[in-house]
Length: 165
Image (cartoon, rainbow, N blue to C red; front, side, top):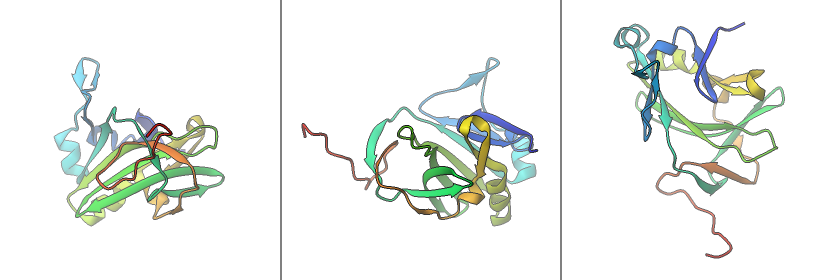
C-alpha cells in the first residue's frame, strides 16, 4: 500500500514528494502558521516542483477538449498541457452523481526523467480515497462523456450560454 499525503484534494502524492509541493494561485495557504512552500533541498533531490493551483474562478464549460480515463470503474475527467518540462492537469472525479469541479496541479521538472517519475508519484483520489489514478495512468484519455463540467477557463474555451443570454 502506498503511503500517500493528500495536501490538496483531490490530488495526493507519495510522502517522498510532499516536501516538493507548494500552493500557488489566488489564495495563500498557511498550515501550522507557515505558507505551504516547496523545500528547495527536496526539489533539488527530486528534480521537480509540484504546484497545487488554488483558484476561485468557477464557470461552467462545455465538454469540448476534456478527456476521460477510467480504471476499474473509477473515472477522471481532465485536460492537460505541457510546454517543455512544465505540465499542467485540470482534473476531477467523474462519478456520475454531480458535475466534477476540475482542480489544477502543475509539475515543473528539470529533466524528462524527473517529470516521468513525478507523474507516477502524483495521484487523483477517487471514491473518498478508496481508489486512485496517477497522472501517468491518465495518459491521453478518450473524449469526455457529453455533459457539463465546472472548471477554470483558459483563452479559447467555449463557455455555455445561459438561457437568458
